[in-house]
Image 1 (cartoon, rainbow, N blue to C red):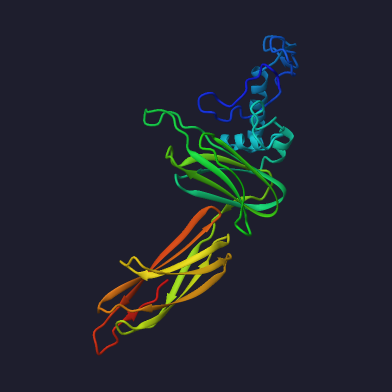
Image 2 (image 1 turned 90 degrees about the vertical axis):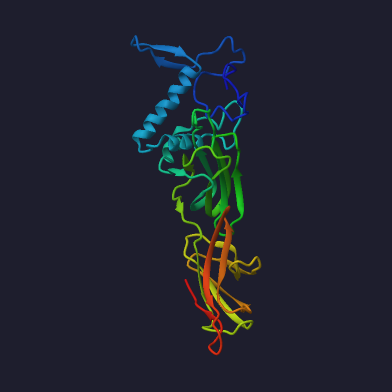
Length: 337
């Protein structure tokens, strides 16, 4: 890196800048006497002039962006994520940023990008199959004036999970930067988690995401559905059985699924573990429930939940129950979906 090239991080906030390195002149230990290594056509003549520094490096990246745009990468944030994801480095350095631009690799991975928006306090998931070293880069913009007060930066973070076990493989989570890069060596399904965490800045936040390998696409994640059955009638204070089935109609496994059954308005409930539920799979459980001593209408709530791939998936389903006066049966339970 040329001695006259600036280094990071930024002085005020310590952000990881510069983003990328590009040809701008050969290294010279004496910055007052740079060695010119880049030649460019002078707009006022037919010859070439020697130049160095940002005047050469910036047009190199700008020209690469123009060529990538003509090759189909239309979104500016996807362009940035792609350029930074395909450099010669996996980790940020103070003199090269995320690395030296590798445009041959960039062109080869030009189809591996996604442009999307993410609301505040939400998570988007993407899944694909990794074969060896896999890396992904997330890029978004700092907001300018917000309600005339000043700038702010949404806190987007990047996580890589094992698609089979749900184990966290790698992460990049900095609250002061607008680029995150994570990588892992894996052979199997990898789930990429993009999260928009606090403090609130702008919602939804636009971002670009790049993958080193093809085939990664948006995933819905686990989707929990519940059905319960019970007896038609019971008498007050009697015990009866409620059986519930939790199904996963999503495209990713739901890990450590739990179900809690309790009466509406009560602070107590009974919890059970339903284990891991694979896509299109199900798990069943039952509760021994005591009917209220009073006569009237009551509701049971079944709350199902799973924390998978860094996100909480939950569902609460009410069940209507009715207590009747003698001599008819005194408690009625109606199942629901």
